Every structure is written in C-alpha cells, then in structure tokens.
Amino acid sequence: MAKAEGFNFKSFKIKAGKHKKTLRGFLTRLKNKYPKGLDYLAATIDKEVWKEVDCLACANCCRTMTPTFTTEDINRIAAHFKQTPDQFKKKLLYKDKDGDWMNKQTTCQFLDLKTNHCSIYSIRPSDCARFPHLTKKKMVDYIHVHQQNIEYCPATFAMVTKMQDLMKVGK
Image 1 (cartoon, rainbow, N blue to C red):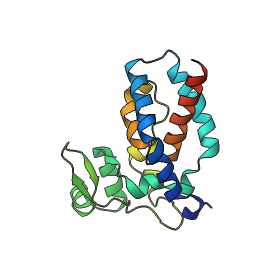
Image 2: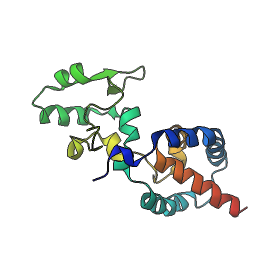
Image 3: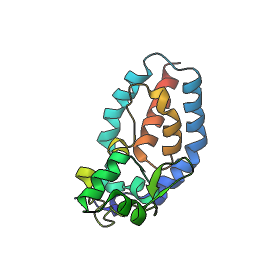
Image 4: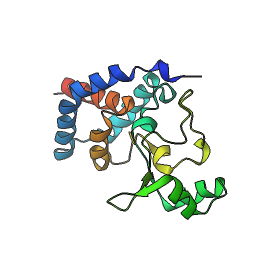
C-alpha cells in the first residue's frame, strides 16, 4: 500500500515550477500547429507514464485541486450518504463563478491523508475518474487542461516532458 511519503511534493513542485513556462509554451505551439499523429503519440506516451507514476504515492490532485461535480455526481454521492442533493451541496460544495459545483475545501474531504485512498472511490466524481485527462480522442481539446495540470500532476508533467523530448528528436 503506497503512502504519501513515497512522493516528494517539495521536489516535484520545484521541478514543475522550473519547467512550467517552457512546457506551457510547448503546449501552446502544439495547439497552434497541431501535428499529425499527436493523439497516437499521446496514447503511446501514456503507457510509459503510468509505468513511472503511482497516483497513490502522490494524490496531489486530491490535496491541491477540486473536481467539478456534475448533477449526476451530486445525486449519486448524496444518495450514498443518505442525503438530498441540496443537503450534500450545502454541506460540502459551493458554486463557482462559472456555475460549477466545487468542493468547499481544497484538500478533498474524501481523501484519507495517511493512505491516499479515496473513501468514495467507486462513486467518485466523474472529473476525478477521468483525471488527469492524458489521452483524449482529440488532445488539442485538452491542451489548456494539461497546461494547468503540469504543476499539479506528475503524470501530466511526465507526459508533456516526454512528448517535448520526442518531438525535438523528430525535428
């Protein structure tokens, strides 16, 4: 069972901060001049990334970000806790400026900080289930998400770094 001490948050934050601007610029260039085969390349790199990154050793997303809760998520999770959707929202969520439902607190209330396990994993929000959105059918539609996640998610950081290295070789 992986524990939080298996991941060095401070080291990752320093490394991500050092490369954030360069990697975001690289992603912007990809978006502006979308190369043929990028989706295939992302799928190939995705397999390499998950050999290196263990989400349970990190859980930085659950510690530093909040998912967007859909109506379906709210209904499902509220029912699990035998609450109405309104009770669940009032207790744990707030509506942001875009009208999205988000956690009131940044460290997710469902994260066990000792084990990095989610206490509602089987019914977690769909945003959590899809995170970090590495391999979407059209990567170009998620480049803005990857630009944000570089500094929060080691898997995203690794994917973009590997992609950048491979594309330099090909030029």
